Image (cartoon, rainbow, N blue to C red; front, side, top):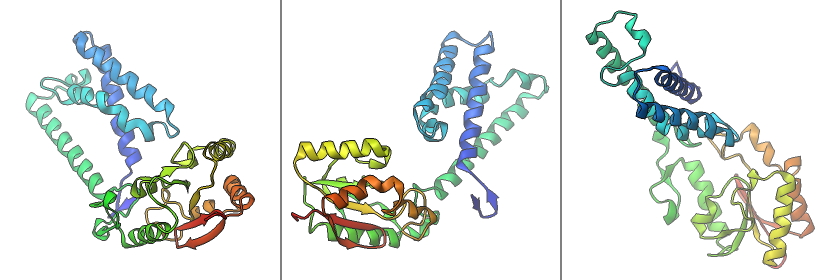
Length: 279
């Protein structure tokens, strides 16, 4: 993304930090003078950094930040610890004062970079924090600020769904909005509060299993926009078309709504509420 004319990407930042951590771990493992204890830490950190992301759908970009908790401190010690540094630095014949200055400036650079990232990054929300001054009327997210459009959409949903949903009720929220459950103290109808993680076959199986076990039909909260693909939702976005009921990926929920004669009782720019005939 472009911010104030500067190209900055958290993918690039994560890749850089990961690469330096791998280089440091290998440097410690291949250096004979490295203490055994530090070699063990380097090996464990390297193993965690390489193996843990394999279990994630997005690999390093999803799990990398959590896989660095051991490798990154080891790398910091390797590059910036007292009397430390890659063996190749010695070949540059730099004085201790120059090396010390390089370490300090490098640390300052990364601190500024991390600070800049922290100020301009939010979890799928506006990059402009001056617009995030509105809250949702719910005690469980009190103190969490967002934009007016998002707060309005959620406030409207919570107010409307209160007519059909009560504490401890089973609700099916489809399919990227698990926050609804803690805000309303309701329970997921299927075993996963995030149905999008299911493929179509598994989702249909889980839905049928839930009906058989619970002997009831839930109120369905259906989102019509992509809350994780657009920073400015509920603004119109190309990815919103994936939440159209006519899309193949939504065939399971569409068939469930039709076969059980659900009716649409409310909608706004971001959500719809479907209720079964008994309601």
